[in-house]
Image (cartoon, rainbow over all chains, first blue to last red; front, side, top):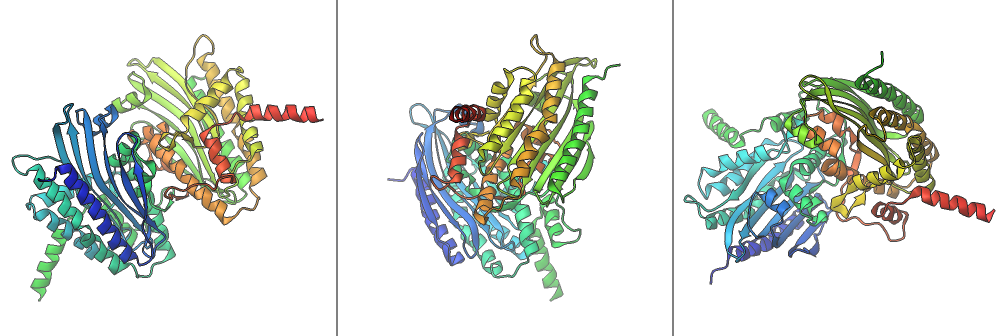
Length: 319
Length: 319
């Protein structure tokens, strides 16, 4: 008998959590994940796995939750959905490295179902994505990260990456900071429902495939940057810039606000916040500096793969 | 000719900013305020005065703004008001001291007017308050702070302090943290309109009187605590607890969210956030410790003056 979508996705995130945590522990070389299993009064629960004070990872979490219950009015408004009950399962991760030269990363893959009074599934969709927040720009890292995201999308059609790349740039935006982006993006997809073009089963595969690409997207970047020396000034810049990460998550992030407003487990939701943060009044980058170059890209997101393709062409012409 | 309410309150906050900044500079002994004057595209502007890296003050701001414009839909919904235009002026201050033994303080006094198409004032009210956020509890400081607030209220009737004290405890609450309060309160009042009992002019006097009591409420506490030695562990506790200050301001504070949603000046609004903050996963106080005693009071606000009165009675009986 075929697994239903709930079980399929739940098994997937359960397995992915194990795999990603193991890979991150190996990359860190010192820190170990600790596990908090919790139950939700309204139904379901989760497993929060946190790590910190490592060689590489200053603070991080790889959390799964599998929750269900009645679709309260608050949640219904937030989800823009109607029905009797909901089911939601997902994996969310955020890694805040010690070094300002190693980027922070966030990813999430989730499956939602709405059921009617009789238990019949009236709506179901998939969402998720992966995005990178560097404090210093290494173009090859940005290109690598986007290449992995594009390859993960292209396996399901080459129309997807450009759309989901743009959605990511649009979503992770601090509107109160003239639209400055949180990072250099990646992909973001949501409300992916089955239609004539792609079935729900295809979208579930798409999300699973993107989840399984996470370590390939992130860990090579960690390996390249983790042992580079950095200055106290670079570390301070990282701590200052982390304040924008906090602002985005607490002022704009739909997942965070949904969790807070529906009485989710606060510690699991706010695990995403960086460990040490400086809120500085009107801090500015020195014109022409590496810090200023980052800010330019955050104001005007770049098509990293166009750049990569262009370079390849240039190199070919030079040779 | 009598000044109108707008000019009266604007002159008051302008003068109060000068006085409070001068008193804080004297208390600090080293740091000096820097001034950023700004204009609001829609009408009006403000003067943001920030201070930092002092002997006593790690980061702080004493800001005034005098703004007016059309009552956009977003702002109208937020203010729960209807009309053509609005006028708002106020002073907001937040002081984050270096030492974990010196409490953080916040205060705000504001005057709002709504006008119709013909320029006639259709609604007007006063709001504000003063509240204290200690990281370690010194009962005599809490009692002193509340005594000054009570005296400031009692001058306008002894019915006010109990109401505004409770409103303060209710307002500065992290609902997502089981209602843990941001601090030990003070007073909070809002939508104080003229009625049969007290005229609008009386409420304006009330707010001005409370504003003028600020230095008496706060500076004696600073003087008592600023030179006390503290440990690295106490400083770390302060940095961890400051994360709750950030959570309240970005998730719940109406003034902050109103400012952000109505395209206020971001740097002036977010000046309230503490300078260095630690977001720690599931941090807990050691049972029976000073830190745990603070958390108990934040969970269950205390009637500090009942305690003070009780002590006085006890001392009188002992003598």
